[in-house]
Image (cartoon, rainbow, N blue to C red; front, side, top):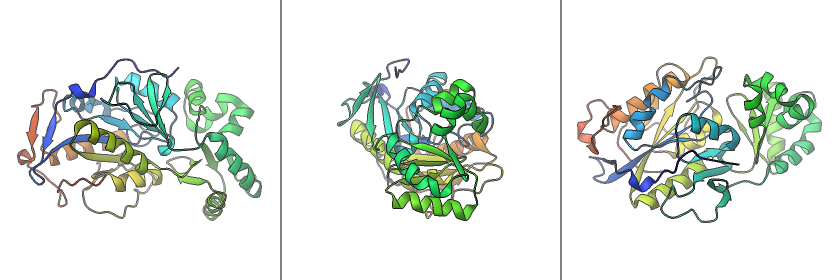
Length: 329
């Protein structure tokens, strides 16, 4: 049973950002990847990033997980951190919105427990069928969650992810997509991805795995959710997307601001844009904390426990070269 701990009425959150450059009132939104960005790649801890959560709540800026993880994985994370906002799962395959969160329930949603779910993807078995057709050519060069779970149970997934067995079982509760562990060469991986695409599938490289799914991505999903916020508030939004991997690029390009997170042994995501792009100092959640503080400063906001209810960008004292607040996503 999908659940959320408390009822959260978004209409009761009055904080607004008044921008000097546009002269309009806007609402702040944070769309964040989890593994390798908000969560440490190895320990899965959100510290020290989570130290900002209460300040962001005081600013009425939702922290919205946008992840390749499943709903079964994200709900316990949200419960642990008292996060009652929407979240996006399986690389944009579905949006989960708590019931009564928006004044008007989203159209075309499916009720799942305490959530309204907007689905962008065909079910998991579609990805598995495509993988079965393509996979014979690459046997021995990859493995995937469903096969590992059938062979070794949750313990097998725990070995490759570092998760607990209970968390590994939740990671296999996939509704729309299938993670692939690639063992072959880089060139063969590119051939594999092309063959998946020829069969009508979609492959995205994440921090650890290739995720096979439908033709959706994180960028498309945050655009949908951003529009719901705009309709609810009848005003514009200013959004920050945070990510560390290739599967985050679509949302990093879509949001008003992008925050790049570095991790050891990985290059930063490559973007076409150069405006309003920040890079966090350090790695993982430490870079997340630093980068979000940078962004708040650019908006003239201060991450404190007590925050005034309307803040003008004229208070800002430190801005990067490209800091005009625009709305494109």
